Length: 338
Image (cartoon, rainbow, N blue to C red):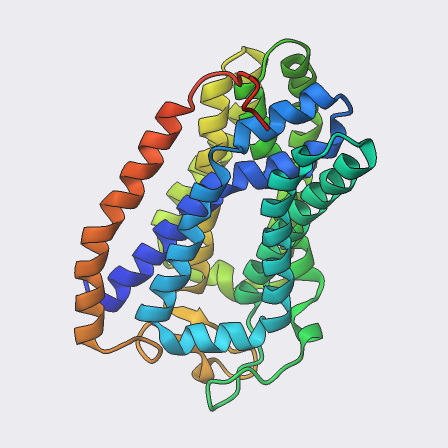
């Protein structure tokens, strides 16, 4: 396998890891305001509190790998999504600040402000991620100089917005399943009821996004047909989606969360299949697209970065395993909790 293709696979794995891991704490933030009791809200914060910042390491690693392996694609993407990325940055900052500042004062107004900031920023960050994915599948107005030739409004449209809403629905369901796994008592029973409604919302948007892809992006569908492995991924997604409510109804919270994780990762890989071998598809002229070849670093750089990744990634994976093992089980609120 060529080095540039290897790095495309690595980027896909990093993005899938981020979507699965940070997806549930973003989703927990999306459903957060649905809890009215202070005890329930503290349970949510303590479920994700020890994990959220480690989860975002995967996004940072993805950005660094994209910059090193495909610098031209990195530059053009950030130029195209500059305003959106600034909004995303503010949303991610507000999430972190909200988690840390909320418990510093007891006044209801203080906590209420940070509660809203936490939930809104979680939903906004998720929506922006989805809009970016939808725009990359649809294509961007990239000119012959490999530079973005559009405006902020060219990033929007029916299809990117549908994918953005699908991302919100997916992460909300994923987060509710994680909280269902970590909670107990009345909160666990309430989440079980919520999961049914969130599943219906996700399933409806999943069907809508699939139909929109068939109508708006026929080239992606034709591209899928050339890769038989896509059918296996699609079958795995369907099986996992169907299994989620069945597993929840039988009290198998861990298995339901794993099924949701599989759906999330598989959708990321479908996104990779949809754009391959492009990184940024030009909607003006496919010949102007940024591909794995014309946007890649030199062979020497890709090889050197591969050696660095082989050394560094085991530490990221080991940290993730250890931290999840340490904080496994139901949430236990004590005096040192959020």
